[in-house]
Structure formats: C-alpha cells, structure tokens
Length: 224
Image (cartoon, rainbow, N blue to C red):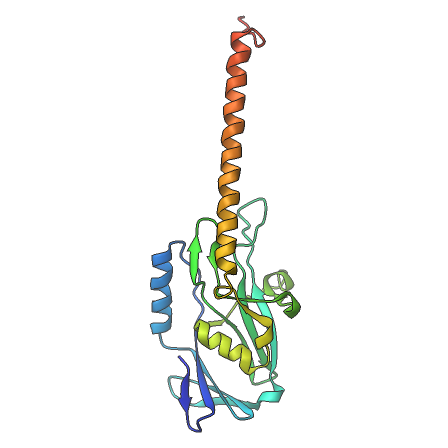
C-alpha cells in the first residue's frame, strides 16, 4: 500500500518477499497473495521531490538516499523455462521493474499473477509493450550461478505507480483493462478444444480403419 507521508508529494512503496512459486488453483493463488502482503515488508522505497530513499520498514532507518535522476529504471521480465518438458516452454512471463543506482539501490520488483487457468496458465495484469524491449532475466543470466529472478513484489497498483514515477508508464500495458487477457483465454481454449477434437477424430478414424482392415482381410493374423 502506498502511504502518503510528509511532505504531501512523498510516497512510500512497500516491497514484499517474492514467493518461491505460484499456486495452480485460483482460490489458492488469491489466498497466497493475501498472505504475501500480510507479511512484514522487507524494504520500503520513499520517493519524494527529486530524491529516492531506501528504508528499513522494521526499524524505519534510512539505508540510503539518491537523487531520482541517478536511478536507472529498466523494463524486465522473468520467464522461467519448464525444463521438465522437451519443448522447454516458458512457464509464465512476470513483468519486472529493475531499479539500480550504484552502491545504493539494486532491486528487481515484480507483481503477482492475478489469475491462473487451465488454458493459459498464470496471467499477470501488466505487461511490457514490444517497444519497451524488456530484458529477459532468465535468458540473459542463464549461465550465471546467481539467481536473477525477482527479489520483491508489490501490489499491481503500486507497480504501475512505480513504473510511471520512473518514466516508463507509456511502455506498460494493462492487459486486463484492454481485454487482452480475456482474448488470450478464449483463443487458447478454442485452440485446446480443437486440438483435442482433432486427436479424437484421428484416433476414431484409425480404429475404424483397423477394424475394417481385419474384417476385409487386409490385415492377416499369422499363427506360428
């Protein structure tokens, strides 16, 4: 939750620990989100005027401060690959905001999936546009031993606010409001049903042909 502090133009963003994994049931996914944001935040970022301060939420001590112009904001995504399948498909694409200022700030901030379905897997409300050319962390650092996934998560509203604060607002797309998530859901559902129907038709046709071949003698049973 963004908290308006003094002075009025200052905003605080609370950063929570990124979960180890996401549930595959909608109710469990929602329950996990509630639990995540009910925990003690690991870090807070105060943005006010021309400065950015990093604060320890527990002690309220300021860890560091830097001019906002010295913070580099980069679009990123975390798209882990499912190595258990031969296709090496991406499990999901989690949008990230990478904030860096040498010696002061180095955070990778993501959002939680808003829903999960049989047809599309985990879906996130926001995504980066193609123009943003987001850095794919899993691909870029695949050979490194250091984990390059998201460190923190914030609420959808705070992530959008942070993106706008650091000048990347025009590159982020609200896929829920635009209807893109629903369109993808419908397309993948139709595709899945069509593929299933194709398999059923092919299997039935083969079975009919096999029976016909036996009855007409095109396939002979050899006895030894």
